[in-house]
Image: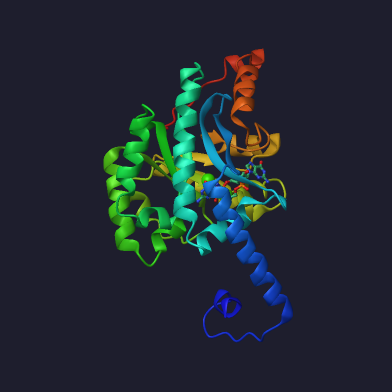
Length: 296
Ligand code: C2E
Ligand code: CA
Ligand code: CA
């Protein structure tokens, strides 16, 4: 039944023995994830976002799961399981708490990290007191609304409970927390929501960034997405930047912020401190590069 449903409506699928194995595996993972969430098997890594001069403008919190039996499981896989099993809101709430705690700890150590981005999904926003939860979390770590950015995909706005989600988004906006559209350009291109929800940042999906130098269509799309951001006065961030050629191409068209393996992989908290120390001694050529104005 689940196979038929996941392939779209009005589908027919016949029973096959491997489905039973897959269903069992899925259930085992669900149970293990539940245990991980209540134990200490989840952790958060942080990927720097840098501006055109290489200065750190924020970090993105990305959740990781080390499953005893199976080693580390790709986030895309366990996040899908968390979504299907209804664990995602609890998991995201844990990530939010951990990310805020970590930001406060870094600052207490004197590390200047201007902003924390946290990934959110539709299930988070359906909770009527989500804005209250975020406010309390920020407050309990001595942080301000402007210290936080929520990254969501366009998909969130096309959820069936869109009315509840809109109320939450309005409340988030009223608090002064920045909203970012993740994987921009891969979803539905109804752009009116950018204005309606006072979005601050657009993140160009890595599929476009990684097509640079190889695929003219991806290049044209990356260029167009930067242009949209520029017209709407939004901060444009490119994700998945792996090569200097990609970085240079994006820079030519005025991209503001960059994130990707070229600068740094997602890092454990102590590694981020080392990374920052290395960055604080830039090469002479970097020192006098012009620093662009960015909103975040
Ligand atoms: P995303 O938000 O689009 O995050 C970017 C993904 O690209 C991350 O994958 C990151 O590790 C990866 N990445 C960064 N730079 C590069 C690069 O230069 N090259 C390549 N090939 N990849 C790069 P990750 O950590 O596996 O996360 C996958 C997705 O899982 C995220 O995509 C996000 O949608 C979701 N996710 C991660 N953490 C959370 C969370 O706490 N809550 C929720 N709801 N979703 C999360
Ligand atoms: Ca993201
Ligand atoms: Ca992405």
